[in-house]
Length: 115
Length: 115
Length: 115
Length: 115
Image: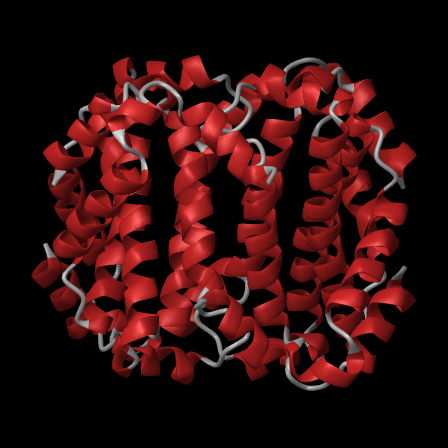
């Protein structure tokens, strides 16, 4: 996967554009395009995309765009993305112990946002 | 990786918060936190993070946050993220042929933005 | 308002950081902090913030942050933001005629996103 | 300005879509479209838009989109946006005293991001 992204970039000599600042901007831009698919609709409705092949195809495409730029940034920095994810999950597992947070994400999150 | 994310969610009974609309918002929010690491600095400077372990650790963490939510959305929709990425790269390979786009991302992009 | 923003920047000699690219990043970052206040909650619930003074104060602060950077960018480019807004509303008035779009934003929007 | 935005919404009976959560998403999406105009270009280059009327027109349009949604959210919550901005600038004036922060935004910001 990492190799496929890197080859695509190299073949086009696009490395010069691949500085981390621009990649971070691109991740933001693609994330907003993904969000746009769910703009003005209810949360429950967004789950129904699962049964709509054309909407699901659009989600898949935008989701791929976000992750391709993430892989590209990881590659630029020589970061092992899979290992980074496992380490972050391990961190979150300590931060949000099951016995305290079961079914309580919401209240916690709100408290954090309004501290 | 997918399994690790899914287990973390299940153990905390957080599935109810995992609707695609809120996940798309979360991807956006985490992407902006990643971008914040490169706010107010020059593009070239952002590349120098590579040699700064504490900055690189922060990048790694925020990058993991973005991709964890992407994996979570893929899981919600039953989307195979690795396949989605390969398909998107195949599409981009056709859309940006090497002989036309070599070293020219910039001009093209600009033209698109201002069409 | 414009003057207050400009004076604040000048007094601190921060003009050098005020290039449009970084300002656009900052608008994105502050917009995501605003969105974070509504993360993981239902749409209807977000309307109830109106009666919660501490939540309303947080919204007010984040909203101000977004618009301060917008004013700063307008100032950098010598753009009259009030006039820009009126022109855009005039454009939208033509683009979305009342007799076609009354109560129909949703479907239209969706059609656009999935064209 | 506030009145112009409100009238546009009312005429189309779009109030039902104007919940704060969706408005916050829209601010994010429009902010990302603004950022897209500066994607893949250098900071100094972004300042040159000033002398390019077609690029400046695009900036003006996207900037208006962001602020229209901000005005719409302020209206929904009955918030006086002008007052909110003045209060935030007053807060920032205390938080970043001239004698400490003159010409030093950069380092401070970085320190904050990596604390």
